[in-house]
Image (cartoon, rainbow, N blue to C red; front, side, top):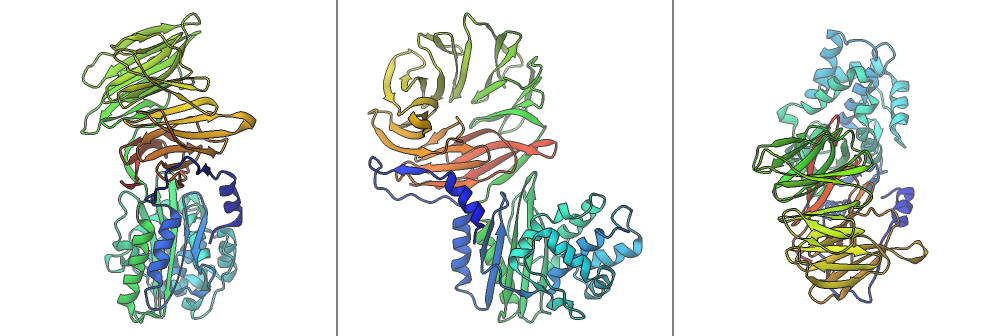
Amino acid sequence: MTDARVVAAGLAVAVAVATAVVAPAHAAAPPTWKSRMAAAERYAQTRSGTITFAVVDEAGRLHGYHARAVAPSASVLKAMLLVAYLRRPDARGRDLEQWERDLLRPMIQRSDNAAASRMVGLVGEARLDALAKAAGMEHFRLHWPIWGESEVTPRGQALFFHTIDRLVPARHRRYAMHLLTTVVPSQRWGVGRVPHGRWNIYFKGGWGSGTGLVDHQVALYRAGGERFSLALFTRFDPDHEYGKETLRGLATRLLRGLPAPGGRLPRAGRAALSRAAVVTARHDCAALTIRPHEGGKRTFATGAASCTGFQVVSAGSRALWSQPDGGESHLAAADYGSPALVDLGDFDSSDPLGPLAASGETLAYAHGNEVSTVGGPDCPVSADVLAAGGDRLAVGVGSTITLLDPDTCAVEQALDASGAVAAVALDDGLAAVLSQGSAGRTWLEWFRISTGKRLGKGEVAAATLPSLSVQEPWILYRFSHALRALATGSGRTWTLWRPAEAQLGVRLLGRKISWVEADRGRSRLWALRLPADD
């Protein structure tokens, strides 16, 4: 189940792929929320009992399976009691007293029922109703005195947990989330047994005294600025152990193929990625650091006054960057293996600096009417767009892409795009091209380099960024907050992830998409894997 508004928004940016020139191949679908939900639904249909569930994804979109079905809350109500109490006017702005902690802690960490019963009296129906409204629940009803029969839905609980930390007053936020992440080991079944990498998990379960009548779990997964939530409800299970296994099976399928949060980095203003290293410019771009994947780092002062106009690319463990300097542009390069940067000089209006590109061992830059490689020749060709890959350079001017040997400047191939070239990407066998055609249309095309033959062409949204990456059989392209993959054999496209935070240095490296994004005052490396076959 998907919000109609979200469906409409998705259709507005959908790719219309032309099939006349696309080989009739079947694409191996990458993991998306649609495929995860489908796998979880298929699993649910093989299990006994009544199963309903909902997901609120990283973009706040709702997905569900019978997600509006009303069910008894059991102990998942205790998370609502925690938040509602901390929102009380007489509690939200002060430190909690010991007696309050002695109620809240066991209620969440070991699901103490006596503490919950007392907390219902302290919170009251009106405050719980107000919280339900604030969370966007379409249905909630407190039952008293048997509060475990309170009425909730998976949809409402997924919405509640998706913003549970934001619903808690700032003064108590750390405390509340600590309770939800320190549930006692004996109650860490279901979602608590499914590996989740570096995602932080905050959850609460509810069960019908081990009878199998009710087995629910609600969880928030969070890493940096990214988050998603699950609400998994089961009823009438053969027994509690069976219900726990169902919850684990659902969570396993819903978590499969998620982007993996990696290590945290100092706050970055720019980033570039290669198979060998991560290159980040400091938040003000005054310094640049090369971090090889096997460990270590080396930092170089850039002298930049800000990140405005700052460009950086990387190949291997080397980096090439440019920055504005008065009315000129300054160019420099550095290698992790050497403590000294290489000053490549200043470029003014008589020899303006253009785009940069890097791949393999090649660092290249366009300037004036030439394209040069660091340590290599100056090729007498202009470039509005520049790319490197597969031991070649791609030079775009107007609607023509020229492929060059970077060592000799020899022309290997010429490709004709459907419009003015905005971006190019290369690997050993394919060239991907983004171009702006007539009537405001934007095209994504891909060519076989050896023959120059166009293999496929599709219209993409005008909001597509001039940033491509290719590794056959995949082309990676993106909007401001969406990563999309196109399978070159079939022409099918998928939205892989909609990051909440801005991405820096997004690149497809083999089957792995890597990027750097903001993480609460720092930065974090992320990775997402694509299937090997198309």
